[in-house]
Length: 415
Image 1 (cartoon, one colour):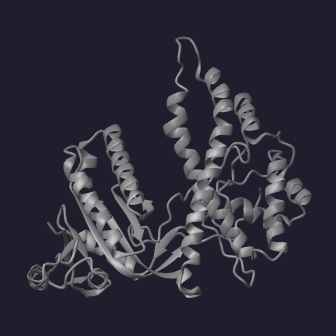
Image 2 (cartoon, one colour):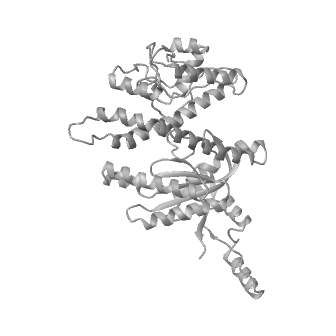
């Protein structure tokens, strides 16, 4: 959809703070050929409560994008979207009953590039505009919230679509027989996969929505829904930069995929939530310190057993965290990142608040002296010793950039 250069957009975050928790995974998404016919950036846009418009960075949108005229691409587009091109952006906005300005902001928020006034939109595009605008008109969503819904959905599904094409369909569409072209294979393959992938996507989304809703309704109060006390952990591959110079691109890609897959499986299996992956680093969160500790220990143990993987280090902090669009922000996140950067290989460093939380919940003793005294007293009474799972060892205090003096604790598993 055509929009001018002053259409609203979120300012790009400072890329220098890679692990501050301010970057959102999946940003910079591709528009499908069914809507724009070319790749577009995330195109973040939105308005404040006053309706003020914020400038979009000029690099965020390709203003020269034009829908493809390739016959196969058009056939695939119609197959995937289930409809033919019928509307220009202006016609689609008018048919949906929304202003061109609002339609343009929705379009950019979903991550699609400008297409001028080409006739490239379908009934599905009109229906999507009508639904979003209807939620605003009904008072179920504010206009800025509707923009956020469009943006978060666009960023997430764009990353999913790119992965499916790059890692999934590319492999499956290799010609199975000599003489067959990829073109001859792609259309029937997508025709078979599309309904199954669509049903699976909806199923997983509903499951994730149910889990997220459950966490919100269990919050102690309304403030805790937004600013929650969580354990936040970063797990970082040691010496990754050196590996990038030594390994071939394919080998490096395989190593990152193994790391991300292993981390994602372990985080999910032990009750945490994977927030995002950053190549050589993963960010996860857990509702309690014990769960975060178990995930960290499992990550270290698993990576240590794989000789092909570099060493791992983990930093965890506990405290108030702001959540937005699936990401986490705040001092707690920054502290976890800093702890990771100073942790020795194959170790877990935690902050003082995390250590106190482990002690409070009975997952770790205040000291090994206390644990020994309690074990002796329990043995004397013929009772089992307290079931502490972890040990905490205070480390030297040290200054941490932007956070002042920090006293890290070394976390280990009790034998």
